[in-house]
Length: 419
Ligand SMILES: CC(C)[C@H](C(=O)O)[C@@H](O)C(=O)O
Ligand code: SF4
Image (cartoon, rainbow, N blue to C red; front, side, top):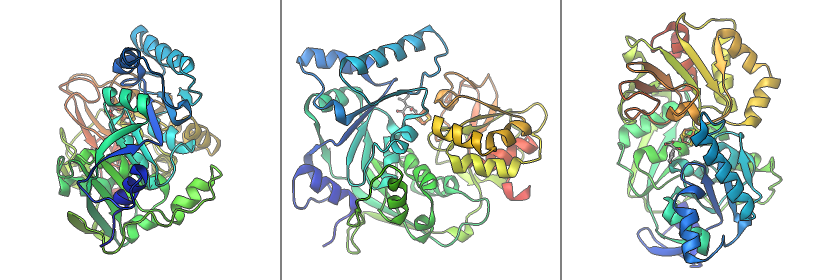
């Protein structure tokens, strides 16, 4: 019998030759990531003091102040200050702020390696599975235990294999693949499972697109999202000087999956997730009567270089609808600078976009783009829960960057292939 990628990683991390889905194990943590919201300031500082222990290995810890940067008020400013000082006090040199949402900062600074086990105090930590790592979100109390011991217990997840084959049509992106998949699996259909993406469509996807898929695995309830290791992974890692190959990090042909889904990429149309559930998915064209007030291109799932480039290609030489606001937040300072150098931000700004700092702010409605009562937004983010981007009476549609750009042009939800 063969093994899934998750089983292979869990075996290595627990010091066993082989493990199987549903085994409960102690695993060694290769990387612990904390953000400013659920990081040191909550349980963690108190619990470590109570236990009288310090961080087990400061070199394995990364802290990123991203949700509250730039701070919108004194409360947020003091949280960032506390987080910064805590990192210094505990000898954690990998501390970032004003660098962008943590899940982009982690991958573009080489903090995630294939086959590693990563835990983070943010639910979208599963993003790093795009690099064939096993990565998952944990609560602050659990993180305190990890910081004290360098270990945590885990049940080896069963794996749902999602296969996409064929060529994606023009202006259909990973976000559409992700939404279609979550629509089929359901918002709790993958609870405590690994959602593994495979097939030739996925193999052809660049890393920016794969990161969008694994990021949203948790929106189907998954413990982890994962894509097997291949040349795309190797080339991405080469940027950080990683020349080692990890060719064993694919599921064996006879691995056991608890469920399998298969989709044809050629048949996929641009998708939207309607308010207020991520699995409330339909084709963008079916919602063309919905007028919007705000369009948002940003976040750890929709603000990468390829996302902004696709949006700019559609918006070049055009103007957004009068009265509508288009906000753009590149998913990191690196992406911001690259888009600046290549003229992508200029194209977006000339179309009428307001370019914001790289931050989580608008994604969860805590600063720079909070929605007012009754407002409608189309967004490249990953959650459309009630009140997610501001007022409890506002609504959010999730879509790909190119669908958001097309909708910003017309003022209503628009299939980008109509532009
Ligand atoms: C604020 C934080 C707890 C949260 C998360 O864990 O995911 C946020 O990043 C989100 O996207 O909802
Ligand atoms: S960008 Fe949005 S989804 Fe990503 S970590 Fe920040 S708040 Fe969460």
